[in-house]
Length: 286
View 1: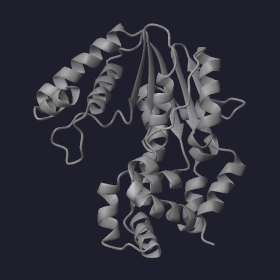
View 2: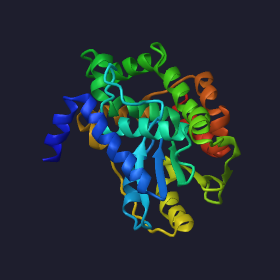
View 3: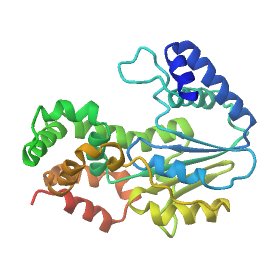
View 4: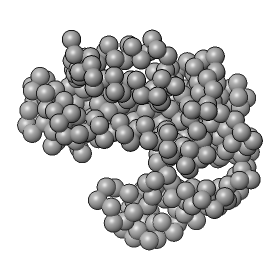
């Protein structure tokens, strides 16, 4: 029944926006604590969100999962922008601009990931958007990996996605949420955290999410949650999983390309020197 209603509304974008915007404004107005999972995508946000939902939070807590607040509801966009998430992102963006959330306790939770692994994973998680045009009928592993590498380098995908990735943490968190990532401190278990009045933020790493998330949420909020793995490439693109695993083992890049990524200030802020070295070593031309 719910799916039928959503389909009906999507055929009427103005009504779709009105219904969901009204719903979210009402939820947020009633809430006393907003827990916002916000990420650039493909870094473990679904796992984080679903894990947070397993907890018993105090009354008045509302948990949301979004990506960029720069991506609002847009019926004219060639990229799919008609979803409840896009409505929520637009509602939150407007509320932040008008200071309508100042009375709320807000916990911004984000996740970061090896950006090269994220870039590769995004290609396979968006298989219909990328792989069908990249592979052009190539089915052999080494032929396919050559085409994927060419797309990432020659077509500018790696450069563009890195710009978007770093801009999210450096610019969007600061401009939208008032959070300067370079003012965050690092806890004993390598989680970046920030606290200023009723505004709190945490940045986890996907590589350590299983050891960081449950204990940190319990320690800070007194809420016990269960890690709920979801939305992996294996779950979304089982048809190409063998090729994906092959790319993870054999795709490599030049030292200069990798140093431009792993020497970036945000990466140095988030990860230890040893971890960055391991990332670079994994993807470096042999």
